[in-house]
Image 1 (cartoon, rainbow, N blue to C red):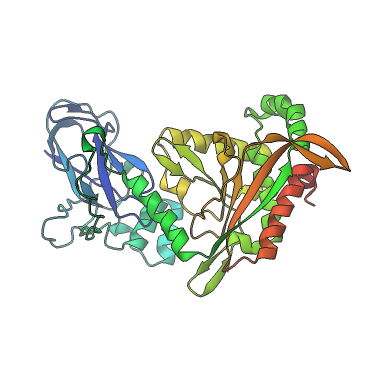
Image 2 (image 1 turned 135 degrees about the vertical axis):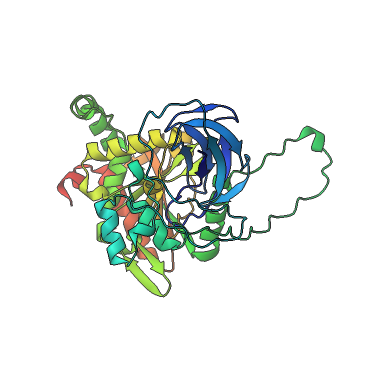
Length: 408
């Protein structure tokens, strides 16, 4: 019996993906849970695994093709392959996106995770009409959120949105034989769109300050060995800056807010995005409820997210949300920059390279390790006084790290 390979629910507000790479070829033996194909969305790259054993009989969507949720990717036929794990609960076939939409097919009932059940009940969503992507076909929170965003995605074929007209090529190029033309990945296209969106929609402004790193470097050097021995993770500078930003955000809530239509949304939680550079592009995984984490908790979370980003294993949940972002261009040697907002957030802190510079301290010239800080902010919601005060608070906390510990 043939088993169809289809595009799974991709996550909140994501309805389309690009077939990045087939990991199997036609004729290959397939075991249950084998990775078959990589899909690239505008946020993450994810693998589609086999729900049945057999042989890859057909590839319908070739590499580079754009596919919508529920679209047919390929077919697993009978043959070699072992059922090494229980197959997901069967789902009634969904026609390919290009085909005429048949009458909606019923979805087999599957276990519903508690968080998913609550969200579904609050929003009047019938979980029986949702195809679960969790283990053994369980309906997850992400499945329900996706169903809320695109109510018909889980129960009926989804027509692919009309593609945006791509900019026309510039025409013949004089040295084309000495150039290499490579298609932009979906992630890189999305990065470009979001950066341009931030410039077009926000009244973006940047303010600067500098911070003396002497005391925080001394504290780190004094405690890093004991810290790593006790907590199993290295003590870096990022945890100090996350904690310093939390002090400033609590004092200046506008920096942790966003504009939604004609409303200002002030958030009483602190999900801090930490920009991470990967070979595929810049991503911003989120440290959830950072104010509730210890220094070790922040360092462990950042280390885990950084590894997932480099391995291409970040989930939608890792990337969604975020109330404020920190970007450390200093790791690449940047001395100063003006970071661009991660919309719809209203503020982003830019850290930079620490360099020894001559500064005046108590009337004397001394050489100190100094770092420039930049805060880009949306002037529609944050006034200049608030932006400057925010950077001053961060500066005070880094120059006197005991302020963070004492919450002063």
